[in-house]
Image 1 (tube, one colour):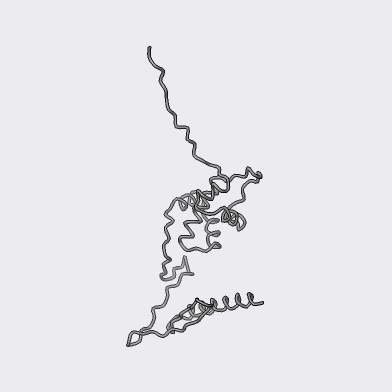
Image 2: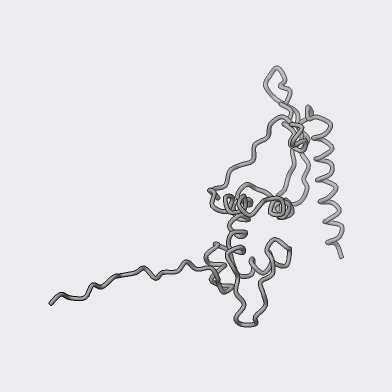
Length: 173
């Protein structure tokens, strides 16, 4: 008498829905961060089902993509614009890419990206020293601007300085 054949079938289903805490853990963020991203419009709101609210695969992909873009030192406003620009396939590819932080690089401006401006090399004096202005923006925060900096760079430094002063004025009682 032959024994019946037993076939083992892998019934493991890939997860496509998560509760808030599960999604946050899977993406490596806090539940509070997920809620904040929904509020900011970086993530779509989940369908509301009370205690049964679930988040889908799109939420996980977007969270992973946000993490990658943050590792590239993009602010949330730029991340939001990037998420809107990407197709679903590009978004998935970004989410699966390496999230290891990489410092930004600066090179000559190109017609495609006029915002990136190469810093001007400081003019060296014969003894090798450059003159810098030192601005204390706030306790523990300084900005050093070379005397040889281009006008655009100096204007940017002035804007940063003015923004911090404006912020400090708002904080005063």
